[in-house]
Length: 219
Image 1 (spheres, helix red, strand yellow):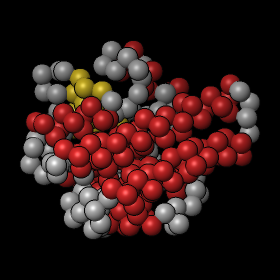
Image 2 (cartoon, helix red, strand yellow):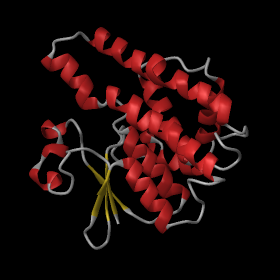
Image 3 (cartoon, one colour):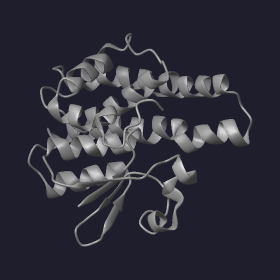
Image 4 (cartoon, helix red, strand yellow):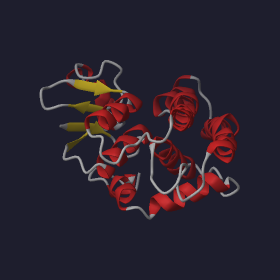
């Protein structure tokens, strides 16, 4: 099994956490999103993932699964030990809802290719791009996630108790991304609590962007 990813990709980060939590042996393959004009656009990689995005999970028989949320659901079905989605049907739906709020509604607005287009093709300044990012992360997203956690979360270190699950795998990478761009989160107590618990958890530490072999800490 191979995971094609990039160290700073929050979607890849989600999948790395799941692989670490479930102790799944795999081969990491770096797809650099900037170098060589973006290695994700090379013909070899596009043959695996026509979207030219990461992550992609290549199984031992050569089958490739794309889109982080689909990969997480696949891993949970094939490796059911330490499930990512648990509880009764309502709780499972709530976990998926929080994860999708981030993956579907927040993350696309601050994807690298979107931000690059705003700056390079549309000519916006870096300050304007940063304002765009901060708006969609906070007002367009994490504040709603915080309110949702207050309503449906069950307390404990993670969103739904003592066990990390699908919601946490979406929240923690998005929080990392927000802090990269100096977006304040300390007034979001549920998200801050989850982030703190995750940073102390061995699986999240293993998956942490700066701990990856392809990490470029000066970039």
